[in-house]
Image (cartoon, rainbow, N blue to C red; front, side):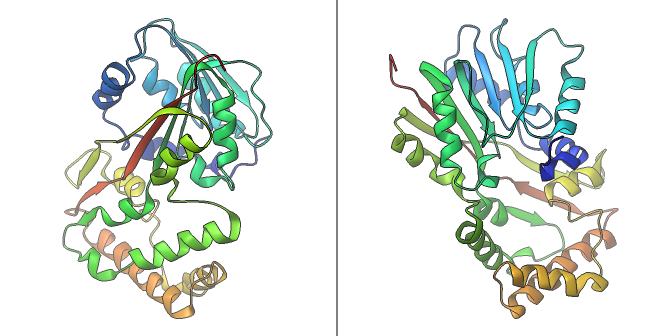
Length: 297
């Protein structure tokens, strides 16, 4: 049974992934940037609920094959539901990426918001390179948390005045120092790709930004997804001690942790108070890096 922390986050993943892509931009990448003209085999590292397969397969040339790998059995069950009645050839493998060794060679190895959660993730990047054929492609789609943390506007709330970005940057850098998780890897991947021997490395920025209005269907789910669970799980002062202790344990001073709590409480209260009229504009700051295996490897 998969022990990933994401294994019990199916609903969150379903809600958040709907706000990550414009399908026409992925189509643009496939046709104009990567120039994929014939059927390809794709392996998705950390496939989760199969979101990328569901996005890619209708856009790739007919006859393309998708293989997803994930440690979460509940996530893979959700992926199987997605593909059950589809005409595409799909395969799902339950495995921890740290232990998994590819037995086949694919045309494309891809991942989305996976590497930032894995300590020493360059080892997974090397494994992705190893899994593709000569002239095969490695594609990594990762957020920049610094960019996404700044690219947000909440109507009626002076988000910038709350000054959470500097504290969150410190938390992310502490995570890198303490446990090796790099939440800014999205901006570093082109360098890493060249370093491990990929060629013709390029990078693009996902063009999706989201306008969320109380007048829209699924408003609460969209807010929940865009704010990483900030709402509808309303914060309470009763949770302050636990919240502050957790952040202090992660490297903040008590003063910084208390400031972060008060800022998050203000955001939560504002969203609740204005849930019939609030609007949000947000961009995820998602970067798409890609490179090719040298010929005849």
